[in-house]
Image (cartoon, rainbow, N blue to C red; front, top):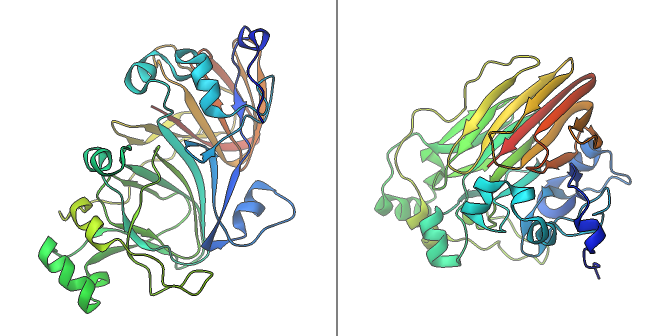
Length: 335
């Protein structure tokens, strides 16, 4: 059982934190997450690694410093806006608003959709699920689905499920390393086989599975579909752009996504860089997708971040000094 956070620890200033990964065995998963994160022995069938999570039943635990072993939700309840930032604390209270993952699609994921905040609150007392993907790697010919390429209505949706034509309406995209996809709640999507991504999303675990290639679970049963639940959640509008266009730069922040729930930047570092977050009033998450670097805050707290590792920077750390070992690529996300 996790010990209570004692007063002496509480009085110690917060510092950049790593967390123990939560590996998720899933029918479509492979072995790339363990290889990417240098976890031994390599486990096959791991579909996701939840890097920083406050989802009930999958709460991340701190892996370094005086708070080692403490669950993220308890740390937040103890430090409140010191960890989250004034703006985030006023908006979300002690609920951590983001979920950070790596996803390894050895096989195609199901065709799915996530509800928006209003529908998720009404049905599940939960946040909705807007998310983004950064493609870390992809095998030649890999693809994914995002949105529609042909007009589909709620009525023709049901018919397409029944007659097996639903897939013909979906917009299929070839993917390669460095591609970015922003997926607001309501957009039908699926990650294709051979794609390895980092995902930044709202704190939610609600997925409506629309089609799953008649796949069976470990007990031989067809996986559950949520055809009717999905109908009200789907955004049937055809949108012109799904893959985000951006211009890579070195040693400066390049914005990949910005919405009401998160902003994500790409940092490709070849030399030291200072980041100042004094005006942000939010925590910051770093996800190392390539290389290795050392980071230090203005209080002298230091941390080494390697490929496959993530760190939570508390709002009390307003100046961060990043020093790549050779070169490194980071995703930087905040609320």
